Image (cartoon, rainbow, N blue to C red):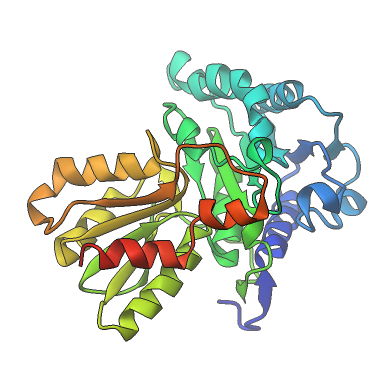
Length: 327
Protein backbone atom coordinates (compact mmCIF):
# COMPACT_ATOMS: atom_id res chain seq x y z
CA UNK A 1 0.00 0.00 0.00
CA UNK A 2 1.00 3.61 -0.43
CA UNK A 3 2.96 5.09 2.45
CA UNK A 4 0.18 7.66 2.83
CA UNK A 5 -2.41 4.92 3.41
CA UNK A 6 -5.09 7.10 1.86
CA UNK A 7 -8.54 5.69 1.09
CA UNK A 8 -10.57 5.89 -2.13
CA UNK A 9 -14.03 4.83 -3.13
CA UNK A 10 -14.42 2.23 -5.86
CA UNK A 11 -15.51 4.84 -8.40
CA UNK A 12 -12.66 7.22 -7.58
CA UNK A 13 -10.16 4.34 -7.80
CA UNK A 14 -11.32 3.88 -11.40
CA UNK A 15 -11.02 7.64 -11.92
CA UNK A 16 -7.46 7.65 -10.62
CA UNK A 17 -6.52 4.72 -12.83
CA UNK A 18 -7.78 6.59 -15.90
CA UNK A 19 -5.97 9.79 -14.97
CA UNK A 20 -2.68 8.00 -14.33
CA UNK A 21 -2.61 5.72 -17.38
CA UNK A 22 -3.67 8.50 -19.75
CA UNK A 23 -0.93 10.74 -18.39
CA UNK A 24 1.80 8.23 -19.25
CA UNK A 25 0.38 6.69 -22.45
CA UNK A 26 -0.89 9.01 -25.18
CA UNK A 27 -2.36 6.10 -27.12
CA UNK A 28 -5.06 5.65 -24.45
CA UNK A 29 -8.36 7.43 -24.99
CA UNK A 30 -11.89 7.10 -23.63
CA UNK A 31 -14.97 7.02 -25.84
CA UNK A 32 -18.65 6.52 -25.08
CA UNK A 33 -21.94 8.14 -24.32
CA UNK A 34 -22.04 10.24 -21.19
CA UNK A 35 -18.31 10.17 -20.42
CA UNK A 36 -18.66 13.72 -19.10
CA UNK A 37 -21.94 13.11 -17.26
CA UNK A 38 -22.23 11.92 -13.65
CA UNK A 39 -25.72 10.69 -14.50
CA UNK A 40 -24.16 8.09 -16.80
CA UNK A 41 -20.84 7.14 -15.25
CA UNK A 42 -20.92 8.55 -11.73
CA UNK A 43 -17.70 10.30 -10.79
CA UNK A 44 -15.46 7.78 -12.56
CA UNK A 45 -14.48 10.28 -15.27
CA UNK A 46 -14.31 13.46 -13.18
CA UNK A 47 -11.65 15.88 -14.47
CA UNK A 48 -10.64 13.82 -17.50
CA UNK A 49 -12.15 16.12 -20.11
CA UNK A 50 -10.54 19.19 -18.56
CA UNK A 51 -7.14 17.50 -18.37
CA UNK A 52 -6.97 15.59 -21.65
CA UNK A 53 -9.40 17.42 -23.94
CA UNK A 54 -12.07 16.33 -26.40
CA UNK A 55 -9.66 14.43 -28.64
CA UNK A 56 -9.04 11.85 -25.91
CA UNK A 57 -12.29 12.08 -23.92
CA UNK A 58 -14.89 11.59 -26.63
CA UNK A 59 -18.54 11.99 -25.67
CA UNK A 60 -20.72 10.39 -28.33
CA UNK A 61 -24.31 10.09 -29.46
CA UNK A 62 -26.27 7.00 -28.48
CA UNK A 63 -24.99 4.39 -30.95
CA UNK A 64 -23.44 1.44 -29.17
CA UNK A 65 -22.52 -0.48 -32.30
CA UNK A 66 -20.81 2.48 -33.96
CA UNK A 67 -18.98 3.57 -30.80
CA UNK A 68 -17.67 0.06 -30.17
CA UNK A 69 -16.69 -0.32 -33.81
CA UNK A 70 -14.70 2.92 -33.68
CA UNK A 71 -12.85 1.71 -30.58
CA UNK A 72 -12.06 -1.69 -32.08
CA UNK A 73 -10.84 -0.09 -35.30
CA UNK A 74 -8.65 2.34 -33.37
CA UNK A 75 -7.15 -0.57 -31.41
CA UNK A 76 -6.34 -2.43 -34.61
CA UNK A 77 -4.63 0.76 -35.83
CA UNK A 78 -2.40 0.89 -32.74
CA UNK A 79 -4.31 2.94 -30.16
CA UNK A 80 -5.45 1.70 -26.73
CA UNK A 81 -9.08 2.78 -26.51
CA UNK A 82 -11.48 2.33 -23.62
CA UNK A 83 -15.09 2.24 -24.74
CA UNK A 84 -17.57 2.68 -21.92
CA UNK A 85 -21.11 1.28 -21.90
CA UNK A 86 -22.88 3.03 -18.99
CA UNK A 87 -25.54 0.32 -19.03
CA UNK A 88 -24.35 -3.16 -19.84
CA UNK A 89 -27.80 -4.03 -21.15
CA UNK A 90 -27.26 -2.01 -24.31
CA UNK A 91 -24.01 -3.75 -25.18
CA UNK A 92 -26.23 -6.11 -27.13
CA UNK A 93 -26.04 -3.51 -29.90
CA UNK A 94 -22.25 -3.70 -29.89
CA UNK A 95 -21.78 -7.47 -30.01
CA UNK A 96 -20.70 -7.64 -33.66
CA UNK A 97 -17.47 -5.62 -33.36
CA UNK A 98 -16.69 -7.21 -30.00
CA UNK A 99 -17.27 -10.85 -30.95
CA UNK A 100 -16.74 -11.01 -34.70
CA UNK A 101 -13.84 -8.56 -34.89
CA UNK A 102 -12.01 -7.87 -31.61
CA UNK A 103 -12.17 -11.40 -30.23
CA UNK A 104 -11.06 -13.10 -33.48
CA UNK A 105 -8.46 -10.71 -34.88
CA UNK A 106 -5.37 -12.07 -33.09
CA UNK A 107 -6.19 -15.65 -34.10
CA UNK A 108 -7.20 -14.87 -37.67
CA UNK A 109 -3.92 -13.06 -38.32
CA UNK A 110 -1.74 -15.78 -36.89
CA UNK A 111 -0.87 -13.88 -33.73
CA UNK A 112 0.65 -10.99 -35.70
CA UNK A 113 -2.19 -8.58 -35.06
CA UNK A 114 -3.67 -7.45 -31.75
CA UNK A 115 -6.70 -5.50 -30.56
CA UNK A 116 -5.78 -3.75 -27.29
CA UNK A 117 -9.27 -2.46 -26.53
CA UNK A 118 -11.02 -2.32 -23.16
CA UNK A 119 -14.79 -2.64 -23.26
CA UNK A 120 -15.84 -1.12 -19.94
CA UNK A 121 -19.31 -2.34 -18.98
CA UNK A 122 -21.23 -0.89 -16.05
CA UNK A 123 -23.97 -2.96 -14.44
CA UNK A 124 -26.90 -0.95 -13.14
CA UNK A 125 -29.58 -2.69 -11.11
CA UNK A 126 -32.15 -2.04 -8.44
CA UNK A 127 -34.08 1.16 -7.95
CA UNK A 128 -37.01 -0.22 -9.94
CA UNK A 129 -35.04 -0.11 -13.20
CA UNK A 130 -36.67 -3.34 -14.41
CA UNK A 131 -35.74 -5.89 -17.05
CA UNK A 132 -34.02 -3.76 -19.68
CA UNK A 133 -31.74 -1.91 -17.25
CA UNK A 134 -30.66 -4.60 -14.76
CA UNK A 135 -28.83 -7.29 -16.71
CA UNK A 136 -25.49 -8.91 -15.82
CA UNK A 137 -24.13 -10.39 -19.03
CA UNK A 138 -20.69 -11.63 -18.02
CA UNK A 139 -21.43 -15.22 -19.06
CA UNK A 140 -22.14 -14.11 -22.64
CA UNK A 141 -18.65 -12.67 -22.99
CA UNK A 142 -16.89 -15.42 -21.05
CA UNK A 143 -18.25 -17.86 -23.64
CA UNK A 144 -16.31 -16.18 -26.46
CA UNK A 145 -12.74 -17.31 -27.29
CA UNK A 146 -10.37 -14.36 -27.51
CA UNK A 147 -11.98 -12.26 -24.78
CA UNK A 148 -10.80 -11.80 -21.21
CA UNK A 149 -13.43 -10.86 -18.63
CA UNK A 150 -12.64 -9.20 -15.29
CA UNK A 151 -15.01 -8.24 -12.47
CA UNK A 152 -13.18 -6.51 -9.59
CA UNK A 153 -15.02 -6.28 -6.27
CA UNK A 154 -12.83 -3.79 -4.36
CA UNK A 155 -11.46 -0.29 -5.05
CA UNK A 156 -7.82 -1.45 -5.05
CA UNK A 157 -8.63 -4.28 -7.45
CA UNK A 158 -10.70 -1.98 -9.66
CA UNK A 159 -7.69 0.28 -10.15
CA UNK A 160 -5.15 -2.49 -10.60
CA UNK A 161 -7.26 -4.61 -12.94
CA UNK A 162 -8.31 -1.64 -15.05
CA UNK A 163 -4.67 -0.70 -15.57
CA UNK A 164 -3.86 -4.32 -16.44
CA UNK A 165 -6.77 -4.42 -18.88
CA UNK A 166 -5.61 -1.27 -20.66
CA UNK A 167 -2.06 -2.61 -20.93
CA UNK A 168 -3.22 -5.97 -22.27
CA UNK A 169 -2.57 -6.40 -25.99
CA UNK A 170 -5.92 -8.02 -26.68
CA UNK A 171 -9.56 -7.27 -25.83
CA UNK A 172 -10.68 -7.22 -22.21
CA UNK A 173 -14.23 -6.85 -20.94
CA UNK A 174 -13.93 -4.84 -17.72
CA UNK A 175 -17.16 -5.10 -15.73
CA UNK A 176 -18.03 -3.05 -12.68
CA UNK A 177 -21.24 -2.64 -10.72
CA UNK A 178 -22.75 0.65 -9.59
CA UNK A 179 -23.61 -1.00 -6.26
CA UNK A 180 -19.87 -1.01 -5.53
CA UNK A 181 -19.16 2.63 -6.33
CA UNK A 182 -19.35 3.91 -2.74
CA UNK A 183 -17.24 1.14 -1.21
CA UNK A 184 -14.06 2.57 0.34
CA UNK A 185 -10.68 1.03 1.15
CA UNK A 186 -6.97 1.80 1.01
CA UNK A 187 -5.72 2.10 -2.56
CA UNK A 188 -2.06 2.45 -3.53
CA UNK A 189 -1.23 5.91 -4.86
CA UNK A 190 1.14 4.74 -7.56
CA UNK A 191 0.31 3.41 -11.00
CA UNK A 192 0.10 -0.39 -10.63
CA UNK A 193 -1.55 -3.38 -12.23
CA UNK A 194 -2.81 -6.70 -10.91
CA UNK A 195 -2.54 -10.00 -12.79
CA UNK A 196 -5.53 -10.92 -14.90
CA UNK A 197 -6.58 -14.50 -14.23
CA UNK A 198 -5.85 -14.64 -10.51
CA UNK A 199 -8.46 -14.94 -7.78
CA UNK A 200 -7.85 -14.14 -4.13
CA UNK A 201 -8.96 -15.61 -0.81
CA UNK A 202 -10.74 -12.89 1.16
CA UNK A 203 -11.36 -15.05 4.22
CA UNK A 204 -9.88 -18.36 5.30
CA UNK A 205 -12.16 -21.19 6.37
CA UNK A 206 -12.36 -24.97 6.76
CA UNK A 207 -16.00 -26.00 6.40
CA UNK A 208 -17.29 -24.59 3.10
CA UNK A 209 -15.95 -22.59 0.17
CA UNK A 210 -17.92 -19.60 -1.09
CA UNK A 211 -16.73 -18.50 -4.53
CA UNK A 212 -18.24 -15.13 -5.44
CA UNK A 213 -18.11 -12.51 -8.18
CA UNK A 214 -18.24 -8.71 -8.13
CA UNK A 215 -20.51 -7.14 -5.48
CA UNK A 216 -21.57 -10.61 -4.30
CA UNK A 217 -18.17 -10.86 -2.61
CA UNK A 218 -19.45 -8.31 -0.08
CA UNK A 219 -22.55 -10.39 0.60
CA UNK A 220 -20.44 -13.54 0.84
CA UNK A 221 -18.19 -11.89 3.41
CA UNK A 222 -21.17 -10.83 5.50
CA UNK A 223 -22.58 -14.33 5.27
CA UNK A 224 -19.25 -15.86 6.31
CA UNK A 225 -19.04 -13.61 9.37
CA UNK A 226 -22.59 -14.50 10.42
CA UNK A 227 -21.97 -18.21 9.87
CA UNK A 228 -18.76 -17.97 11.87
CA UNK A 229 -20.75 -16.90 14.91
CA UNK A 230 -22.65 -20.18 14.59
CA UNK A 231 -19.54 -22.29 14.26
CA UNK A 232 -19.47 -22.68 10.47
CA UNK A 233 -16.08 -21.58 9.09
CA UNK A 234 -16.57 -20.39 5.52
CA UNK A 235 -13.74 -19.63 3.13
CA UNK A 236 -14.48 -16.79 0.69
CA UNK A 237 -12.86 -16.65 -2.74
CA UNK A 238 -13.11 -13.48 -4.81
CA UNK A 239 -13.03 -14.80 -8.39
CA UNK A 240 -11.93 -11.38 -9.79
CA UNK A 241 -11.33 -12.71 -13.32
CA UNK A 242 -14.19 -14.58 -14.95
CA UNK A 243 -12.06 -15.58 -17.93
CA UNK A 244 -9.42 -16.92 -17.68
CA UNK A 245 -10.69 -18.17 -14.34
CA UNK A 246 -8.29 -19.15 -11.56
CA UNK A 247 -9.06 -22.85 -11.40
CA UNK A 248 -6.18 -23.59 -9.04
CA UNK A 249 -7.43 -21.40 -6.19
CA UNK A 250 -10.93 -22.90 -6.43
CA UNK A 251 -9.72 -26.49 -6.61
CA UNK A 252 -7.36 -26.05 -3.67
CA UNK A 253 -10.11 -24.59 -1.52
CA UNK A 254 -12.59 -27.33 -2.43
CA UNK A 255 -10.00 -29.96 -1.58
CA UNK A 256 -9.69 -28.34 1.85
CA UNK A 257 -13.38 -27.75 2.66
CA UNK A 258 -15.18 -30.41 0.61
CA UNK A 259 -18.09 -28.09 -0.05
CA UNK A 260 -18.66 -25.34 -2.60
CA UNK A 261 -21.21 -22.55 -2.89
CA UNK A 262 -20.94 -20.33 -5.98
CA UNK A 263 -22.54 -16.88 -5.83
CA UNK A 264 -23.02 -14.90 -9.04
CA UNK A 265 -25.58 -12.11 -9.44
CA UNK A 266 -26.65 -13.25 -12.89
CA UNK A 267 -29.03 -15.86 -14.25
CA UNK A 268 -28.56 -19.50 -13.33
CA UNK A 269 -28.81 -21.37 -16.62
CA UNK A 270 -25.51 -21.53 -18.55
CA UNK A 271 -23.99 -18.95 -16.22
CA UNK A 272 -20.62 -18.49 -14.52
CA UNK A 273 -21.83 -20.57 -11.57
CA UNK A 274 -22.63 -23.45 -13.92
CA UNK A 275 -19.16 -23.24 -15.47
CA UNK A 276 -17.38 -23.30 -12.10
CA UNK A 277 -19.57 -26.18 -10.95
CA UNK A 278 -18.65 -28.15 -14.07
CA UNK A 279 -14.94 -27.45 -13.62
CA UNK A 280 -15.07 -28.70 -10.04
CA UNK A 281 -17.07 -31.77 -11.06
CA UNK A 282 -14.57 -32.61 -13.77
CA UNK A 283 -11.44 -32.08 -11.71
CA UNK A 284 -11.97 -32.46 -7.96
CA UNK A 285 -15.26 -34.33 -7.69
CA UNK A 286 -13.79 -36.92 -5.32
CA UNK A 287 -13.18 -34.24 -2.69
CA UNK A 288 -16.80 -33.07 -2.54
CA UNK A 289 -18.76 -34.00 0.57
CA UNK A 290 -22.03 -32.62 -0.80
CA UNK A 291 -23.38 -31.33 -4.13
CA UNK A 292 -22.23 -27.94 -5.39
CA UNK A 293 -24.71 -25.13 -4.66
CA UNK A 294 -25.38 -22.27 -7.09
CA UNK A 295 -26.77 -19.06 -5.61
CA UNK A 296 -27.84 -16.97 -8.57
CA UNK A 297 -30.68 -14.89 -9.91
CA UNK A 298 -33.72 -16.86 -11.01
CA UNK A 299 -34.18 -17.37 -14.75
CA UNK A 300 -36.64 -14.51 -15.11
CA UNK A 301 -36.26 -10.85 -16.09
CA UNK A 302 -35.65 -8.33 -13.32
CA UNK A 303 -38.90 -6.97 -11.85
CA UNK A 304 -39.77 -3.28 -11.59
CA UNK A 305 -41.52 -3.51 -8.22
CA UNK A 306 -39.33 -2.61 -5.26
CA UNK A 307 -40.95 -5.35 -3.21
CA UNK A 308 -40.23 -7.94 -5.89
CA UNK A 309 -36.66 -6.66 -6.19
CA UNK A 310 -36.09 -7.62 -2.57
CA UNK A 311 -36.95 -11.21 -3.47
CA UNK A 312 -35.16 -11.21 -6.83
CA UNK A 313 -31.70 -9.86 -5.98
CA UNK A 314 -29.31 -11.96 -3.91
CA UNK A 315 -28.29 -11.05 -0.39
CA UNK A 316 -26.42 -12.44 2.59
CA UNK A 317 -29.54 -14.27 3.75
CA UNK A 318 -29.76 -16.35 0.54
CA UNK A 319 -26.16 -17.48 0.90
CA UNK A 320 -26.62 -18.40 4.56
CA UNK A 321 -29.83 -20.31 3.83
CA UNK A 322 -28.14 -22.32 1.05
CA UNK A 323 -25.19 -23.23 3.23
CA UNK A 324 -27.26 -24.22 6.25
CA UNK A 325 -29.23 -26.61 4.02
CA UNK A 326 -26.06 -28.54 3.24
CA UNK A 327 -23.45 -28.11 5.97
